[in-house]
Length: 377
Ligand code: SIN
Ligand code: CO
Figure 1 (cartoon, rainbow, N blue to C red):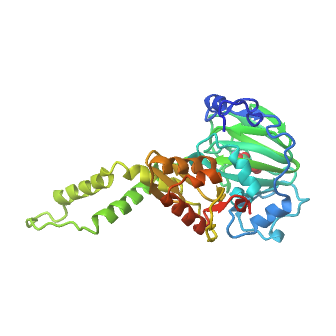
Figure 2 (figure 1 turned 120 degrees about the vertical axis):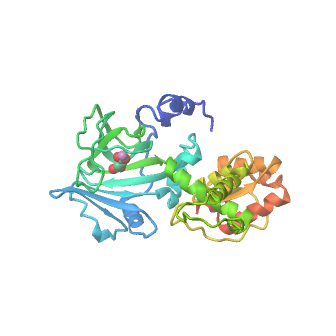
Figure 3 (figure 1 turned 90 degrees about the horizontal axis):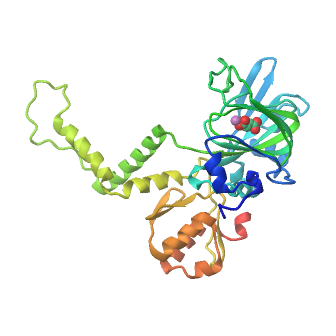
């Protein structure tokens, strides 16, 4: 992607300008971000997804009993009638199931893949919405079908209503409002308050991002480092043949303290251990993601990553679906192309070393990579 070229998607800003001026800073309303946009799946297809065990969905109803929320899966008859106002169905991770939804997400790859999360589709009956709230992550809200009235505000008071099963702001003070038509899009930075209410039946797509918390990163990285260090050091136990008798048995021995410190230092001694753990963590497939094993093509031509595959790289590794490979030279450049573009042309594959071709073949067998064209199936 040319990051200096103005895009209709970003209201004639280039990705570079958008990231500098708006990302994590201030909202952007784009009229006709995708001119003539039509919903990528209809209501029936969305309801079918929401009935699957492998898809995360929520139903929010606002009625005489206040706000109510339930988690899916939902059989069709478990959803309220279409004529009933004020309800909304939210379906997460639609890009994992619908190729066109994944294609849409690809338009936002001017943001690092490590930050891209998923496409959530909401269906709302007239008046439906999830109430005034703020999200912890950046979001692009693309109007897919029907119209939605948005009110937004940069408010400081983030107190939530009590006793409500979802996060609804207690004192929402909107500063701006707009009605979005199909193809219009609103970008909101994290913690920007917003409230979208359907005007008639409507569908909205949320292009969502993820950002690891410190606690999550520490937990995930330490666990991976421990596994790597355990593999390297075997199951070496703490030994204390010189331990004298103690008259204060409650005290933790200083020697055990030192042992713990050495264990942690050893886990980080390899300068590549942390980047490796980070890449493996960031490319771990989401829960409920399964790949269909396949046979590798006999002669490899154009290749494309499966839409569920996560692939990234750093200076020393390529990472794919939670696995890391040390890579250097021409093969590393090829794998980096694959991670960036998610596909390789036949002439690029032909230039790969035998080892790289074998690796690509094994990824095809795992269902992570397909001959291009098959990727769309
Ligand atoms: C929705 O699509 O109903 C909710 C999206 C949001 O407000 O984040
Ligand atoms: Co929101």
